[in-house]
Image 1 (cartoon, one colour):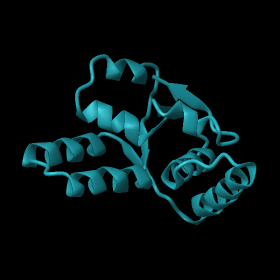
Image 2 (image 1 turned 45 degrees about the vertical axis):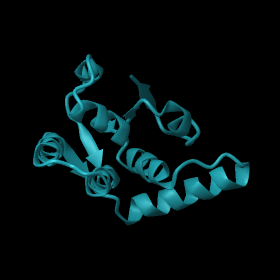
Image 3 (image 1 turned 45 degrees about the horizontal axis):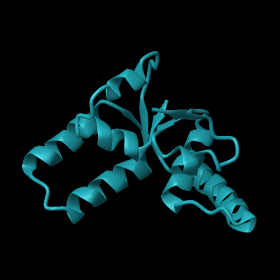
Amino acid sequence: MLLDTSFVIDLIRGKEGIEDALEGSSVEYVSSVTVMELWEGIHLASSTDEERDRVKGCLGDAEELPFDRDCATEAGRLNAELIKEGTPVDETDVMIGATALVHDQPVLTRNVAHFERIDGVDVVAY
């Protein structure tokens, strides 16, 4: 299961019951795009060492899937389709969705509205 950035943020913040969403999942993955989004947030905010450590710890528990050439090719196709249809979503969500498709993983997210518009992505809401 590919963990969307929204899920990882909620996990880091200790949202009650969040870990229940992982029940039944044997392996959790994050996209390298999620890694970028998390560190971007840390650097934009006035983050403490404790917050940085929580990000490191959370990322250390998940296997990272790279946003490579195959993912970029798929993301370009998907993003173009969404733009042509007049239903674009954040490019980072398209990149995460493409990573999920290339690696045949569902996306665990609370941002269902974006990921459901990405054709072929299996969305797991929490």
